[in-house]
Amino acid sequence: MTDLDNLDALSSHELHDLAVRRALRHLDAAFLWDLLRAIPAGEAALGNPEEAGEDAAHLSSLISDAFASGKGELADSLRPIYLSYLKKHRGDLHAS
Image 1 (tube, one colour):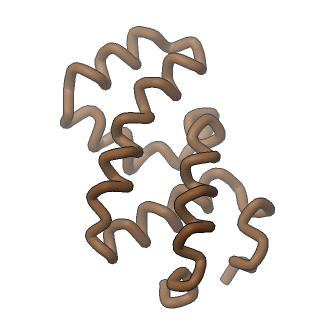
Image 2 (cartoon, helix red, strand yellow):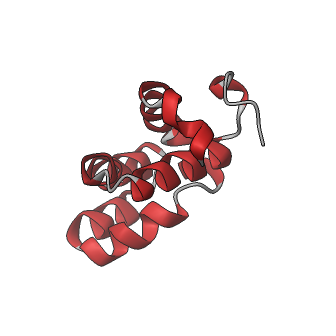
């Protein structure tokens, strides 16, 4: 297991996986909803306005993107969200 005491050292992909797994395990719909709302902004920040508009218009696309948002530049764009969430819930990450 990766050292969870230094979350900043984890890759964006690892942060995504930890955060989404924790949210699913704890039925944390608020975090998942925040993530879904952040994806269009993340896409826009990467210069993908068409993808951002499509994500905002199609919830199913957002849900799919949420599970795939741990890859590549989008994961890096959403990194602050994962770090904030994981630091807030650091105490129960070791149970993963």
